[in-house]
Length: 240
Image (tube, rainbow, N blue to C red; front, side, top):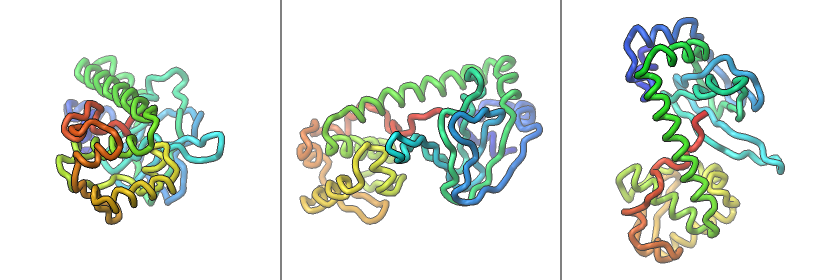
């Protein structure tokens, strides 16, 4: 389980502690469309994604998916459920494509948490970061104008990727859900920004041609891309 030690959360652990966590672990391959777990399931494991793509979501009252987090290779998820009362899953975990997932014993994580101050401090910091991300996401989603939500998201990506040449992490349909915008509205906004020579979009590639003018277009401060105070990864709000 050397790959587990490369994860940010567990990189502080010794080789022996990694072995302790991975004792009894099992790795399985899941097909696209399969669920690893569903909301309200009791979880006795947390998971490490070896390869593939997992989506954490809930179904809204209208039957639409509300995406909370996209899990990619090398990420750990459902680790905080190990410390939740009843260990009840708050979300569904869906395979977006064929994926290899390692299941690790939640009891061993809880035991090591009690013994290792290093892991305890790291895990608390991790949870605190996720709380901050959740607050930032709520703040962004309560911005009334869809245009401003979109530009704030692009500003977040700019700060995260350090370039005006952005790679969108999601398809436009998923991005629309993340921003609480109808897909048709998102498409119209991107088309409008393109026609005004503010951005260039090709698939998941998005170039911010004029950050200041883009901000002024949606009545945001012209220095938003340089001084955005929300977290660069604010749409990774779920620490499940």
